[in-house]
Amino acid sequence: MRYPVLTSSDASIYLQARRSGNPIDLDRLSKTRGEGADLSTEFVNDLIPALAELRRKHPDASKKGAASANLFEAEAAKVIHERVVVPPEILADPDFWLWMAVRHFGDTIEWRYGSPAAGTHLSNYGIGSRSENLMFRLWLRAELVLDERAPDRYHLCRRGQIDFYRSHLFRQGYANVRNFARALLRFQYPNDDVTSPYLKVDQIRELVKRLRRLRANLFLEILEEEECREVIDGEAETVVISA
Image (cartoon, rainbow, N blue to C red):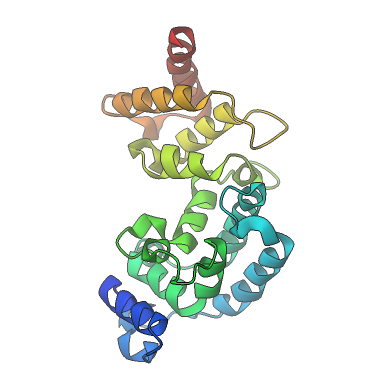
């Protein structure tokens, strides 16, 4: 399937030119990748107003450290994941997400990070750090903890804080195992207050170090979520006792 992409270098050229007051035609820089029929991008037309509505609902989410930022990202993750339903090979292409971010969702990205006069850091578009692309990062949040056995398969997506996902799921080698990601999220955020953590910052950091080392000798992919939780509980007990 043919789909639109934008490379990091071309995205950087476009954004820098726009910020300097000398905009260039993005169509000249956008490319296509793949073969066969063209990907329908109608989902974009539905996603744009959905995210605009969330920005209105959570106006303080653009302030650094604002509690509403957690709420916005949790709800936005679901909104994006529900609508961006495309073949796996496209989802795995960072240049597709870069095209989405630059072409259609620059207003959301600039708003989310405070709209500084000079523009937000380019990494928030996925330039220089592909995993920091806001659109991809929020889609991944929902994808990692999706619970197909629950009536609301996005219910876990509402749990956790932004830094937990970024530091303890996205950047860790075990994070691509959905059963393990769900188990760790449930462990760290077991309370009715879905952003209230169980372990303190230094404790969760130590636990993650242990889990990362354990990953080298344990094939997590074959474990059920309950078995993943047993592994986490065992390592956490040592962390709590030694704290």
